[in-house]
Length: 111
Image 1 (cartoon, rainbow, N blue to C red):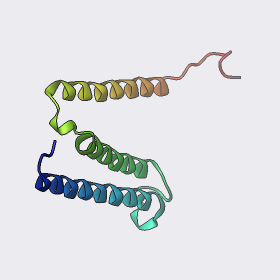
Image 2 (cartoon, rainbow, N blue to C red; image 1 turned 60 degrees about the vertical axis):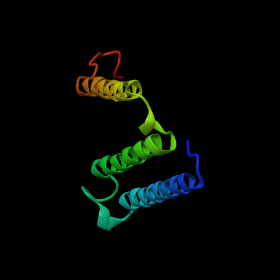
Image 3 (cartoon, helix red, strand yellow; image 1 turned 180 degrees about the vertical axis):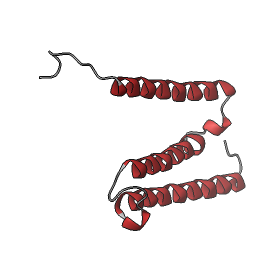
Image 4 (tube, rainbow, N blue to C red; image 1 turned 90 degrees about the vertical axis):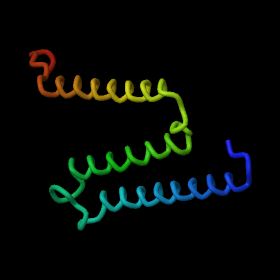
């Protein structure tokens, strides 16, 4: 915690800077989704634009977690739990991709 007015001013400046970066990230996400000159794949919003938008959202979420939720000052156990949640999400995505690659071919399932 900040104890002196100088430390409070320093924290306030860093919070405002992170807030500005989050605002610019939001604008960039909207521009990637709507503007043709930032269209990275086929015409219109497609897979590539979605991946770029999710990468921007990941950076923004990491900033919020590290700075505003003060996770940058936590113990290493928090980092292991945080990393474990990413591993779990990637494992679930892998399972979904397996199910998508091998659909059920049953005469009663597809009618």
